[in-house]
Figure (tube, rainbow, N blue to C red):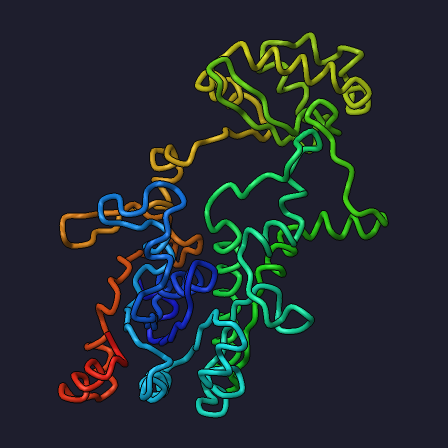
Length: 403
């Protein structure tokens, strides 16, 4: 298939996960993403938060967010490095960065600098808290700015838990916000094609988290409260929206928002037609009035069968339901396999890594992921494309400009 961003060139000066994950999406969409790294490399190359760093020669976080890119190891603080970067940007479409404002100004790669020298280049920036305000100069991490500051952690933490819950996965907020940044870049590319004007795109981790929490935030503001009241699963508004444990210690989720429409069918499928007209549960109002008893009754029913048995039972009725899966099991999910939501990426050296596909598909096909580059793997090739001679490349290496 022809990838939608084939022919687009992106120069990325970014580290860690947020902005590089946006570059990874753009790469899978077909863009030529040249990752400019310091001589020590993007620090996420050595990050170990899950115990799997270095396993089979992989650092999963780096591989996932830097898929398909080319790497040039360029010390942007070295004399002569600015010339190399400018030549990289001469035919580029997008400049993608996560550097803080002070560092960008010192290197003369801030918005005004790049726009003055390369007016056709879209400037895409990922920040912690936005371009304005008292914290505009400060950085951010998704655990702080997305998960904590934007109210996500507080929103998902039950009232009986004494500490806010941690993120469910590393770079959870980074990946979410990175996909938003990639979407903004794609929109800016379309805008430039129609108007000839290169825009500045800015997505912050704080804004990304607030976008994800917008229903909660809007409702809290509307009601004039710091936070919406938290209800336990035993005091839910609707017992048909919740999670229930099976006898093999797995879980099924129900999300039957129109509970009165699905209650009779669910009861019949469960083998409990007597509950349909039970005066405690026969209407949505009565189920709410007797919510603890209704949840307890459903708890007992679901605890009597295995997850596999419940898949069969729930498949006999029309209400919406699902299963709670574990991360390592998703590779075996038939729906995941059918849509290539996980794909095996061949590194060409006897190694392969299963990666999650970017969520966008085009022409009904998953976008093919490619391996992430080793540090500086493409330095010579990229410089050759820019017109540097072999002797000039050697001189740059000797001078410590490139690695």
